[in-house]
Length: 331
Image (cartoon, rainbow, N blue to C red; front, side, top):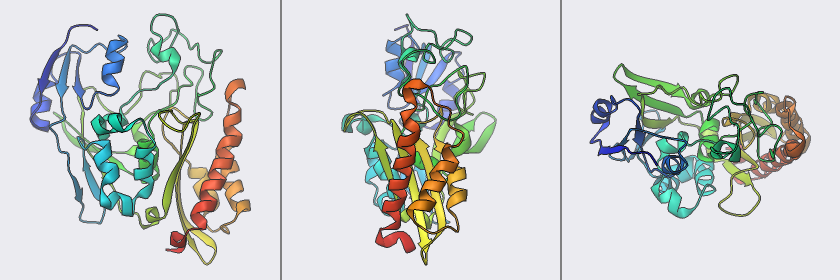
């Protein structure tokens, strides 16, 4: 680990003053950044602790929620309003990591966690365009069972690891950020980037921009929602496939649908093709399968992760069937 300084910001304005040091980074719970520093993948010159930012969840005037950047994952999952209005978010958070990590991790830091691709972490022995642009990607010809089947490029096939962000994508969450130039809002679905020719660029966040809050718009359909994570073991494993979904059915017809996938792409994958295919269709297995097929038509798997296409199709259909059968589906 290389030498660095540490300071604690009192609030967002104080954090803005401290980030002027070249190579400085903001520090939340540290559950990913510290690991990356130990592996010498991240080498900040200064850490600015921003856990003193807002750690409250408040109601917005339009019926949504404003989540402070420093809210811990455990606290957000346990919030009564989240459990009642956005159950998919609670289930996604609880599906991630361990209880100890969720107790430390902040919601803002969760958005910024980096891929768990083993070639990315192998700084001494593997080529990785995300870690060293232009170096190549050993995952493409290597062991890529966990890697992307949607939106990948010839430069990078890594997947985004967060469960929470998959639910946030389905919920049309908005990320609030601040810098010396002012505040701005970024749709969560646009916040993370596909790899293209520059996989080292992972988010729309500027170098000196700070996440201050995440806004959840009101979404009545989300009261009938869930999150299902398929993984190699029952706990503390990243998703092979995950599905965040919400469904509203009226007289047997799908009136509204929200769907996002995890474990399939470089970012939380909002399944807009599947959503469009569902609206106005009977809430039955045929329609759910057609929607899954519409979303997965552009899948481009590699030999070792081709199974993910069928796994994603079956998981989408099973999750939608479960939601259509719940008493709240027709709400």
